[in-house]
Length: 113
Image 1 (spheres, rainbow, N blue to C red):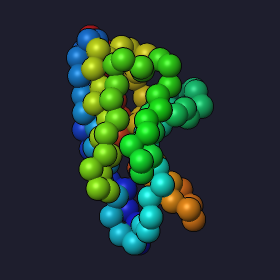
Image 2: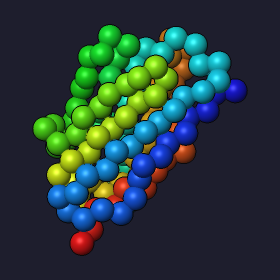
Image 3: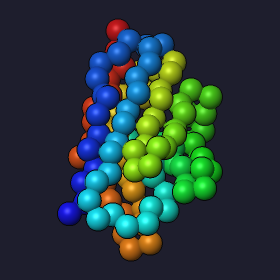
């Protein structure tokens, strides 16, 4: 059974930083890509950042220069700096394999003074 366990969310003031982690365990097979999505209240889920098995990264324009995605084995990280209130959302980890996508349960990130 595959599990994705996220951690690192919380409440932070504007301009602050958080680091999200997601550990994938179980018989997950070959990982093609790992990434982070987010969903704010009343909005659709959007891609935040991805990293492929070849370490190619991709970011949504709104986080470029502030967020950094990285990976170590079956763990993916999202370093979030200079956080803004509009970054407030539930952040979901995603793992893409040749067979299917896997999703984490989500971790809340709230940016507020």
